[in-house]
Image (tube, rainbow, N blue to C red; front, side, top):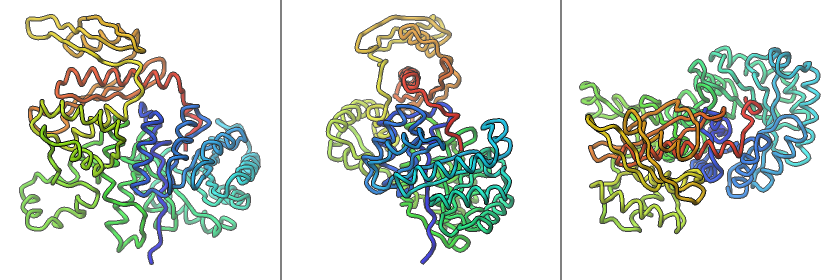
Amino acid sequence: MTERIIIFDTTLRDGEQSPGASMNTAEKLRLATQMEKLGVDVLEAGFPASSQGDFEAVSTISAKLQKTEIAALSRTSKEDIDRAWQAVKKAVKPKIHIFIATSDIHLKYKLNMSREEVIKDTVEAIRYAKTFTDRIEFSTEDGSRSDRDYLCKVFGAAIEAGATTINLPDTVGYAVPREYSDLIKYVMAHTPNMHKAIMSVHCHNDLGLATANSLAAIDVGARQVEVTINGIGERAGNTSLEEIVMALHTRPNYFPLSTNIKTEHIYPTSRLVSMITGIMVQPNKAIVGANAFAHEAGIHQDGVLKNPMTYEIMKPEIIGLSANNLVLGKHSGRHALHTHLKDLGYDLADDELNLVFKKFKNLADKKKTIVDEDLEAIVTDEILRTSELFKLEYLHVSSGTTVLPIASIKLIISGKSVQGSGYGNGPIDSTFNTIAQLTGTRSELLRFSISALTGGTDAQGEVTVRLQENGFIALGRGSDPDIITASAKAYINGLNRIEHLKKNPVNILAGRL
């Protein structure tokens, strides 16, 4: 029987630290439910002490999920630990994840603490957390730049105090594979009572080495790896779940190890994360990118047609990507839609299905056929969207080579209808100017991108925007067969997310690993 690698997913915590990728409670719960279906062993649901919104999300997820171990991040203070426990205590398997920095540069410039003081805080924190649960993980922030002998001393004290998992993060993505694996090997060999704990790794991708470093650590004995879906996360992101899992799955001759991940749910989960966060997956992204199983060169196409294994080391079906999508149209019924949505990972309640079915029928009148990407866009817009302070009710735009672009818009703001019009340099600029005028917002547009969800001139357009206002950054997304309407939806979605952040500010700096 092969050894098993524990998959610790931190999409909802570290992944949410991607600029603008904040999620509300409903979105986090939907994603957490899909993570449980995917088969992750540990789900880090958030950092409860960072905001009331995060506390509520972790609490809701803990009460809802039925099998997955739920972790809450915490600093070494009793206040943080109390908050973490209150958030996860209803979980079937509650875990408290405690961290503190250990590198000399962090001790001097961030913590202003001595090495001995850090060990003292670590021991006291773990002993206190131990009064609530036996599931304790301890992490050394900036561990890869810490003195290795000091790491052994800290980890030894943590295990002695009751930590069952010790995590050595490459917080700033500085390590390279051989260096990192040597460090892991040394720590495992020289930490007292190491046999009583699981060695975990958490790598960032600043040098593009997060997956390589994690695999190198696994190769020398690490048995838990901390990951995010699509590799999202702070700065350049985190180790990608799909890359780790499929590397182990594809190379069993080199890695005689297994995971609990149900690989057929990888692609649907990737799409869900992209839809919720508004962060699109780059086309050449390993495993889940649009080009991952595409072949344009003639010699490649010829080889694949004769035997897919000539150029494909994985079958697309393994990750849940099938070329044989069920095509729905305007004559498709409610049952067919419900069944297909369940196959995609969306088990909707009756009231949610009613909303989606209505939008599905409206879209089917405009498009000849409806495919998976269209359905996911509808679900995101109708079910997973941020609670709306601002809502689009009416949009009319005039534009052309001989017409001054003008947008007439009606919005619902806090339940009240307001309308107005405004000019701009083009149809989208005039639309955004009018929305800003009606909402009284002063956000700066940092990024604007358009893509087609499917092929064909009748495809839905998907627009993603990144907005900034008063230090808050949020992504907004919208989809519609009309690209101007999609742009308006994306802009309004971004404004709603900023309003959500204003009410639930998150102390991101406090939760770095």
